[in-house]
Image (cartoon, rainbow, N blue to C red; front, side):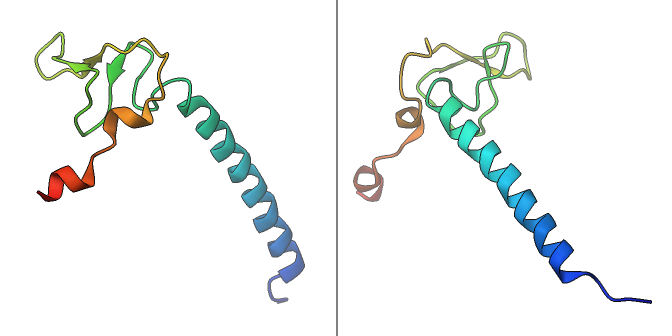
Length: 86
């Protein structure tokens, strides 16, 4: 039985990296336009606090996202490290 074809394996890995790179690039573009934790029903799926979160509509439900999608959402969950240390 012949061993693995290294050239074929390398080509497959390169193709997989190309595909994943394209996905990451698109995700980064979209994240600047809409919070990546906001789902289609305007509910927050994040497991951390955000200034746009409001209480869920139903018990045990996801929090409501009240943002207008016009901001850079990364600032909504960034933490002031100096403030947290003091």
